[in-house]
Image (tube, rainbow, N blue to C red; front, top):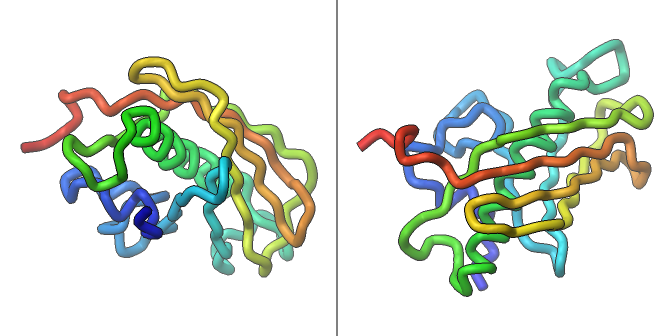
Length: 156
């Protein structure tokens, strides 16, 4: 199994997302991988991701959940198809629904760990539950409903 993040396999024309696009030089570069039966992404917030001194802006946490959710959906889609990321045709998912619950303030200056659990794979739809932890404490939970990217969004 390839250890590279699934985002490395997104086709260039759909790899510009601020959260997870490898071709967005100013983006977050969220990278999602399998870690056993869960998915994992690590992100260390930068100083500009401050809400109030010492704490992470909630929008960054939502972006992490969002992009790790769609990356997790792609991983689940490949697994459901019995194939590896990078095999054709490529799978790219977009967010149909995003829910975020902020459980406690998230400290700035420590890596954030996003863990995804695949709840449902049904046709072109994947539902992923995600937790975000900082220094071993869960600070946010989210749910992402992701769907395969419509052909109308792909530029050729």
